[in-house]
Image (cartoon, rainbow over all chains, first blue to last red; front, side, top):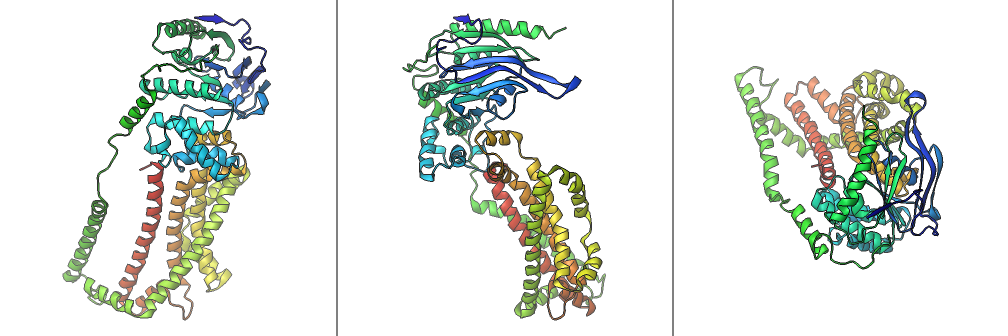
Amino acid sequence: MTSVLTDGVTTGRSNDRPAVSLSGVSKVFGRGAAAVHALDNVSLDVAPGEFVCLVGASGCGKSTLLSLVADLDEPTVGTITVDGGARPGLMFQEPALFPWLTVGGNVGLPMRLRRVPKAERGERVNELLRTVHLEEFAKRRPHQLSGGMRQRVAMARTLALDTPVLLMDEPFGALDAMTRDILHDEIERIWQERNLTVLFVTHNVREAARLGDRIVLLSSRPGRVVTDWKVDVPRPRRIDSPEIAAVAAEVTDRLRQEVRRHGR
Amino acid sequence: MAADTARAVGGIAADPERTISGLDALDLGGRNRGESRLQRFWAATWPKLLALAIFIGIWQAVYWSGWREPWLLPSPAEVFANLGHAALTGSLWHAIGTTLWRGLVGFAAAAAIGLVLGIAVARIRPLRAALGSAITALQTMPSIAWFPLAILLFQLSEQAILFVIILGAAPSIANGVISGVDYVPPLLLRAGRNFGARGLNLYRYVVAPASLPAIVSGLKQGWAFAWRSLLAGELLVVIAKRPALGVRLAFAREQTDSAGLIATMIVIFAIGLLADYIFSTLDNRLRRAWGLK
């Protein structure tokens, strides 16, 4: 089901320029004795159109890594390049919708900030809401929707950035299992239709196996790339299939080994 | 692994779109309140009417008990008759006009100063260290304590009243802005920055709207301080030939016109209710739109 990529860089399309490339990235918070090494010498290439899942226990710097790629923070050492200088879209565990805007207003905001003309913006908002099956909710307020619906609005809003690279920080972590399964299908469909490159952080190993072309395991404190698996299970996949369970078991074993290092 | 573009039967159901709309319908089910507008109006109104009736009843009882001479504490009927009579003459309306105008001008100036000050203190760290606690201290300072200085600086003039209104109201408004900016959820800031809102745009599209509820409550408090300062000012700073509510109070006391005095106080109270109604409506609308209520 899986194969370990020896150097963590090779992919099936190694001749393409990577969509996202991290090389020798370290991030230290604070100074001196109190300094926390969140990431230590992380190198990772994500090919265009690839769906890469980052897994790891608490404190492995997964979220820090996404912040760095999203250019919301600077690495202490190392370089990060996003192909074509695109600004990646970032999604969080919380939908982070703006309560003072309607659903349509939220989705339109990234375009408003890019000064997309109003008429075109309206059309794009409709199109994006159709993509997440929420076209009739454009005039609602975020609080009138369920958690799963809000997360779909957040997805549409991130797509409104028109970016080829999507960074997702445990986006389905706060949802119930049923909704999460459906959103797995949705994100997979959107990723395929729009040819996106996705860097997806999760602590849910099964979710990583369900979605990822690759699974990258990060160690904790400091965060380092431990293992990089290629997931060969053909799509469409089901999270409850034996193939996915087998991949998840392999990753979980390695993850537990990593966690035990921190025990007494 | 290359993406399979052909999408076969989904993992969850044969018709994923219907599964989603079904789930959405279940999630949103049963959220109607089922109360008519009239019912809600009545539910909000009858306790107020009852409270008013009880208050007037107690007043009448005290009047009947003979605790004070009738010319010191008149009956409710007498006061309302006085009020009705005053409403027919122009002087009461003139007084209301003058006082409200002063209040609005002072409040507008205080709002402008408070907003600018609040944003500056919230943004500039040394300024916050310098002025942060001073603003709160100013807020707790009784406005009447400013009047002696105001009268020395501006004599018995409109400016003296304006000066005290601004000093009374601006700190509350500034504090509202500061706490609004401070409590913008960091996640919304991160999201906004990710969408390309940086610098001034971040303030315009994220910080300003996110702090709106705190700003509105700061304005509400600011109005209360402005109104108090104003009435105190009108008692002290009597400007000749310009009727105002505070002046009416002072004159009524001098002439031992209790009915006129209480009638004027009722007017002041009613204006207070009106202002509260306006701010509460604004606040409620905001809260309802945001889903905080």
